[in-house]
Image 1: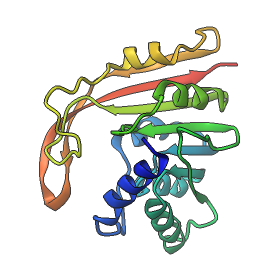
Image 2: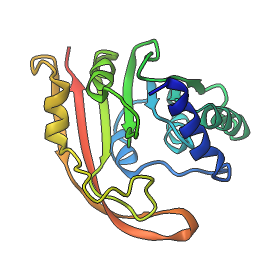
Image 3: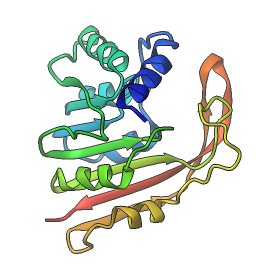
Length: 208
């Protein structure tokens, strides 16, 4: 499958939605980061930018990466509109082929799922290696299918947080799993719809 297919798909997903004016951050992020001192953060698959904007508002300098040029351009404009243009750098990356440069105190990957081929374990392993000592990698995956999800495959199986950690295969002497659970919450979707969903939350800290 050509790289352009993935780009066209995700550009189409975001172009079909109205541009967000005040996107909300993901709850597992706000729960995790509140106690951390601000530093450099990387948001993988930044989408509408709710996480990146919230982090910037908390004093973080954020590199926000997405495969969709539509998402990246909208986020860059939105960051400027919110007075956060100096704290948010929005960049287009196809994670199958490149990974953002730098070292980070926090890397978050929320719902980094795609219908296209992606060696997710390799991407997340690269993320873990891009952490500074005492940095955290926060991975939040779908644990259930929301009514508005683009993937409505009834046979889809979501890996547990521990299975995701095992797939990344990090040295326990350097990286520690601080959280691996599956909380449920009421999520809000397009058009004001709500549904109970399960998140798979994995938090990994680099100790050295």
